Image 1 (cartoon, rainbow, N blue to C red):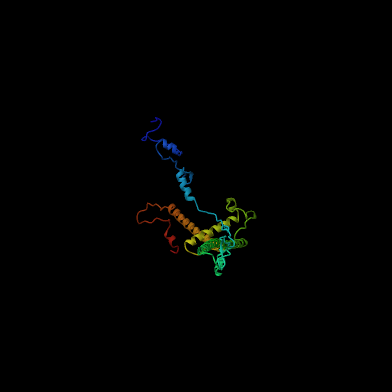
Image 2 (cartoon, one colour; image 1 turned 90 degrees about the vertical axis):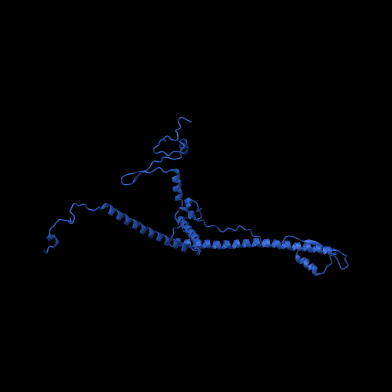
Length: 305
């Protein structure tokens, strides 16, 4: 064992005002740290703060973290591709038909199931029964593949149309929100945004703190969070910035009134504590049954006597 290393039962050295590192504490076989307490004057004011350990600081930082996600209105986006008009693939095939005597074979190209049905209506001669069955199989395959392709096209077409309609509705909502914000700005209820920041990136911290931008972001953030709360409560969401603004103003006024009432109650409580603590009962050595008060005579009680 190293002679310089203290034993476990020896008293560990005290380093005043120093927080030991993990390496230092490991050398002593102890994970504790020495923390210097804070110093206050006679009036209770803090002269020197106490040293805060890393764990305590991390705990305090965790408690101070506040979820303040900035509101970002997503722009309408169409990710689906327009499939256009349906164009069936080429599943055509050829058959050979003959005259009534089974001669003069002629090749006929079948481009669609309608062509094949029209050919059957003419009661043509395919030469042999196996040739007819083969033609029927090819026609069935053509019909099946065409129906499959059309179903896939319809799925893509419906998805595209759905996104187009959703984007239109979203754009209408954005235009309505912008109009309502402009209305609030025109009424002087919200500060105007400088032209330099009208098309800037509002997620940039420097831009987000600019007058007008800050208030609008706060209002939209409130509207989003309020709608999240309403959704959980199974209530209808706010769809108007004007309604959100009025709700925010009412909530702010209620909070201020509550804070003022709370502060007044604490002030009265503190004043009562000062009066009770600074006015001790008078000390007297008078015998029991004898009241001690201001000196005077009976004339002082009633001048008419």
